[in-house]
Length: 106
Image (tube, rainbow, N blue to C red; front, side, top):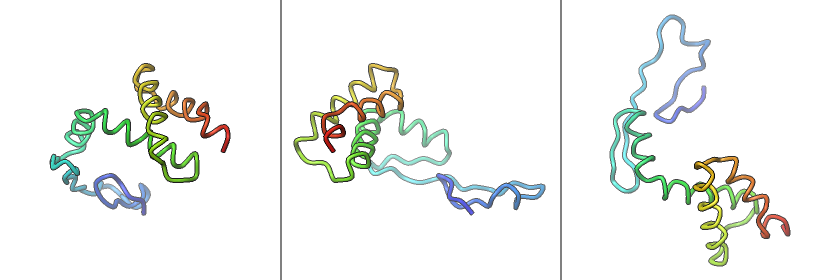
């Protein structure tokens, strides 16, 4: 089994002729609620700045192999700005992380 965004689903070979019903509802940390994947996506798009910053922080932590410090804040903001200037591209974020001083001197 694998985990979907909105709950556990069996692998495709276990579905047979009917697909399982997936209950897709929940709440975001800011209190926003959603009841479908489309609403979940809309909620993320409405908070794209927060989402992009969190994504940049998590990927940078993974790349550096350590938690971020206060001195990393300018790096994260620079990565987010670079990503936004390049059409919100994940590729530009990863390339930006690889080009940071912190990553190169790791």
